[in-house]
Amino acid sequence: TSKQSASSPPGEDDSRSASGSGSGHLSGSSSPPSSPLPLLEIGHRVVVGRVDKVRGVIRYLGPTAFADGEWVGIELDTSRGKNDGAVDGVSYFHCGAGRGLFVKSSVLRPGGTA
Picture 1: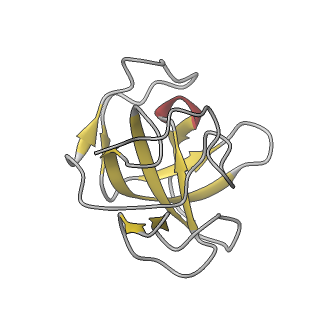
Picture 2: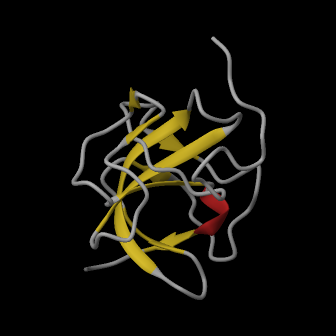
Picture 3: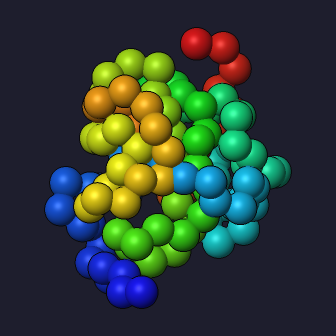
């Protein structure tokens, strides 16, 4: 399989809108987050970002076809995402249009309630 190695694939900025079944968990060892997340798991609630924060639920963890590395697919609580869980024709998870987002674990913090 070929992967895009660009730092920001079209329509993405270290946050991606896709989802899938992934490995189910991901440690933040490659880029330690500012608020430690000891273990990310599908179904955990998170806050994305530091300034313009949005909340959502992890729906995918793992590699993607759109960029190298490990990505976290988030279903956002609001329509501030970039996709519906699919990127470049590959479906990683399913959510409403504009509610999917892919990010690196370093921009996530524990999320609590909506």
